[in-house]
Length: 416
Image 1 (cartoon, rainbow, N blue to C red):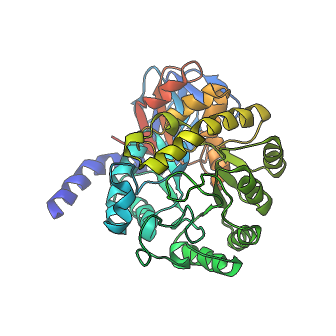
Image 2 (tube, rainbow, N blue to C red):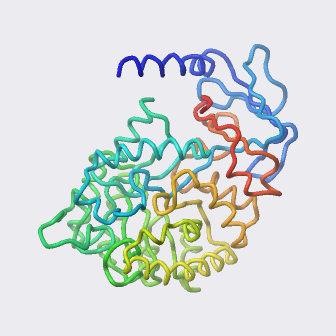
């Protein structure tokens, strides 16, 4: 182990020293200001000690220079809905009784690197067993592993037998309580929030409705009562933490929005009232639509596959309706349900649903930063974290270029 660590240190040291001891200038044919939509040519970003110190102009004397060529510089991408410690693969539905949180953490190490290499420098991990995503966050922050900045939810919260519970097994197998996110009644949900925050959660994820990848019959029925929803939002807000609500069915969506959640995840069945309510409250939609063409249907048990086939067309129609109405959107992929590392495919799906390329890019940068409560990222501006990605050509004319990054930099360090 020690020789491997020594080798990694020797390989990373020159890059880290460059980032810390002298400014680094990144040049490209173009730079997109995602806030205004203005394309600058040529593009230049200067970084020092992990922050952006200059945008545009010429590189300062003595700066190390990275030339990205015929590419466009963009802020590092933000995915507001991932599950780094999970993957949909044959047998995934029995993993809760075969594997531990350690298995999830090891899976997460590989998926974190794939995600970072894809240009996503920040992710919100919305649910992970055994606080594995909290451990991943700490490992990334320490520099032990390479991955995006992680905002972990720890255990997702839900009712006994609901979408966030482990279902499909005999009584007595993997029964869970508030520490692991399963609660009943407002008081237990308050305890569940406190347990997640105690052990490192930076956001709270709830299952307001039924879902696809769980063994209840319904795909969208409301599962948490309004009192339970209110208790979660109240307790999280007391600690300055936002709440993300998994919600497919329209009744549960409206209840979650009224309770004050920051975002609706999936939002598969939206009517005019739900859309108006989300606009009124400023609630974000995190649509997770690219998975519809990428999910491994063959890996799903028949009940789950049937629910997926039922809900996916409805979710696509709802997303188009929300885009046309001007609901705030942040990019999220549900990576795990779709393969990790393909996160950028969400951009093209957003454009296909009616967003402009600029709006899609804003969803995966500026909007994501606002939703996550991280104002130090999401655009290329002086003082921001030096998180950026270069994509070939011009993403305003070919949004799929986001799927082929030629350069990824996180905190001023080039990721190779």
